[in-house]
Length: 65
View (cartoon, one colour):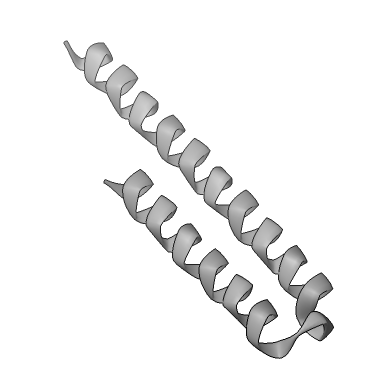
C-alpha cells in the first residue's frame, strides 16, 4: 500500500511542478526540473526502503517458526 501511495504522491507533485513550468514560463525550468528529479529519486528511495522493511519482516517471521 505504501508503494502505491508513494507513486501517486510522486506523480501529483511532478505534475504540479510541470504545471508551474507551463504557467510561469521558462524562468522555473531549471529549478522545477531539479525538483522533479529530487521527488522521483526520493520516491525510489522510499520504494526500496519499504521493500527492505517487508523483506526483513518476512525473515524475522521465518526465524520465529
